[in-house]
Image (cartoon, rainbow, N blue to C red; front, side):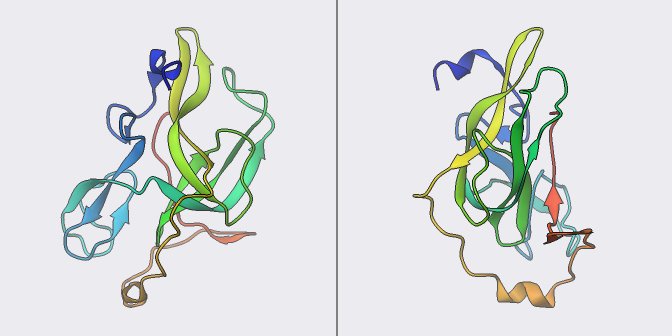
Amino acid sequence: MTELAAGRVLGADGWYDPAEQRLRGSRCGTCGTRSFPTRAFCWRCSNTMLPELLPRSGTVVARSTVRVSAPGFPDRYDVGVVELAPGLRVLARFEDEAPTHGERVSVRTGHVRHEDSGVVLGPVFAHDPGAALLPATHHEDAALPQPEARISRGGQLGVTVAGDL
């Protein structure tokens, strides 16, 4: 980690806490719905959201390899969708080769890309077999309004994204 400390860290000014190595999100004080990135108001019940550090570990629910990358990025890298908590999924960059579906991963600060001023660091997820399993699906979620979903070949992903990759 000491080698990484020299670079600029994506999201360090708001949606990522590099010291804790956790994403910053929010939770509704009324219904408990979590969100990433942070929101002022809950999309389910419209009440005020409270800031919180999100779980460090999650489960891979989708993955893919980027083979044609933008300048500054590695020629090839892996991305995917990680479920951090029931109903909370984020688009993730994997540190090394993508873990398989269902594997446990944890967020950490790692190399994202290069720019003229040097290395750009940010949250990356890496295989973590020791990470705790997610709790069972919330039964109370069935009674709440569900978000509009975009359907892909793999099914509903329900992904939110933040940052300036």
